[in-house]
Image 1 (cartoon, one colour):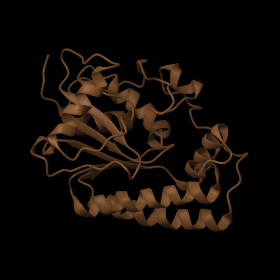
Image 2: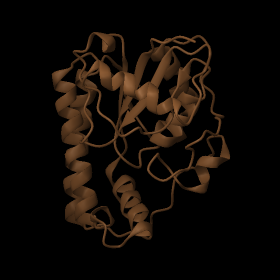
Image 3: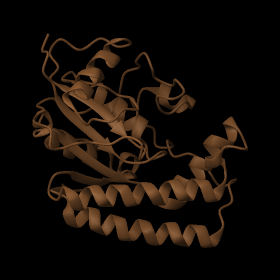
Length: 241
């Protein structure tokens, strides 16, 4: 077993197909990790903790040399000045605001109507704050990350997976079919809907959110922020697709 792993990080936001992407990436024979581990990476001790925590529920693949995590919240930060992260592969990905915010509202209303993210204003604030943090990261680390629109998971699956394979630098292709793991569908680790258990990308993977209403002013604000942030992310990206 290899004890030193290179890292892959997906920096995005909630409801951006990140659970699906995590399972696709984490099903690759050279890559461990598929769910959100809810931790920062500010020191070598944090990197060691990632391996320890992951190994409590899932086995490290014997021929693997990458460890994956996704960061979707501003509580969790990434220190790229760590020597161990000099070769880390960083992805930043956004999803368009209307389906994203409506999906956040719908998800959290199923948990509690009193939840902050169950309210249009709270869900929109999360999205706006997350976009700002990702934009700040991009400006601080130009040419250090790859960018893609997360809609491509559904609209250009093969093209996106081929590009991700190239960016990661693995020989074996990423597959649109994926495995099930210890925390697949578990609350707090990612998507809990039945769709994540299908084991493959389906044409209708996009969630129906027409029953969620969003104020036009909030939507306009989010749309403007998305367009501005996306333009900056594309500008500072090492490559994009």
